[in-house]
Length: 551
Image (cartoon, rainbow, N blue to C red):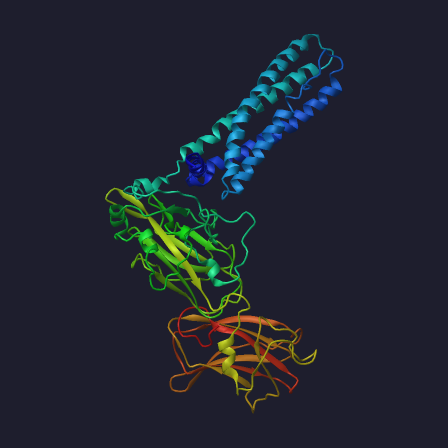
């Protein structure tokens, strides 16, 4: 058992997941270089063999005929492919170990072509003075080229393991920040994206994460953002067990630690019943003074939609100046956020409860973004932050509907509908996203149109009012107005008439200023008769505050 435990510990410490970012970049470049060199050497070796078989008839030997120029490069190519597999499956331990063993074999095997082809090149150069054609000299330089490729491959194989040896399993900045982990047994690995991409969640609880995909624990559906022009600059890693009390007080200003939180049922905090999940947490940070907007992004798997308000909850510990916020974005859009909460800077370790306002009727991702690693005082730079016990709550994340909004339309001349309605020419051909509100004519200047009134509403800050409409007949329009204090009517929007192709959903938004509204009216106008249909859907504000119509 002790041998198995030692071997398991070796796998944890030997994994590529322990490499800091710069070292990881160098290692990846060496792996790609290994593959490129192996491919070129194998291709050139096959060409050399073919030319040797064709044009060596006048000489006492056939160039590149002993297989050293083909089988050894092919072996190198297979080993290099294992390296590519290792850097694409970082959640697995074995590919990295196999690649390491393969590099050792490659170093030994490649000595064969270097010696063999060097001797062959010398022989072919000796044939040049008496040769009847140029092929002796051609063969000599081919062998020299293969020797140089083999030497380059040998150097690459020797250098490739060095970054992983240099990148020890203890994450560098943690050691330097007052020995944050000196009293705890730590294992670190990156929180990585799945090799096969991210699948949308089926329920809100799928995003509950306490163990960050540690061994024998539930898979955590949060991942590191890929670094790049629109990505982040730092990575999140997983840690185990509590850090030292003195270190916690010095860095985070509190003696409460992650493992202690796991022993308590904090109010509003999701807890797992799995005993293996206790003690794990995610950490990011740096020892350098970074620009304020450089960040570490922990991204959820895609969410199909959100009905009504959602909540993200988590615990966190941050060093001075470091801020964290919760954002939403369309999938794989980098830092192009649709919504971000205010920066969270105090109250750690929490729990923090962040409201994700309103319905989101398209696929999106949640992002926990830590920023402002720009502390620079008393000889200390950068900063660090730890998060734990992430959870997400929403009434629905599949087949989201505007239920609360549509309940308000009774008696207004509008009704709810779930499918097509009316005839082919003047009816609604298809719903947009579930139930929608629909009305018919006739309307004229005397009747003033069919109005759908929503409110009263209190808008806490300037926001956008979103809506979608479907006009089934030519000349039909939608106007939006607001009734404010003193019964004053404000015209907010009026669509243009159309002459062709009326059968389509059109989604739009208009600014809605901060204030108190007695009602907000959506009025369908220019509906000729009872067969002329007009529909509305997805009405709502995009951010916090009491909504006109909860999405």
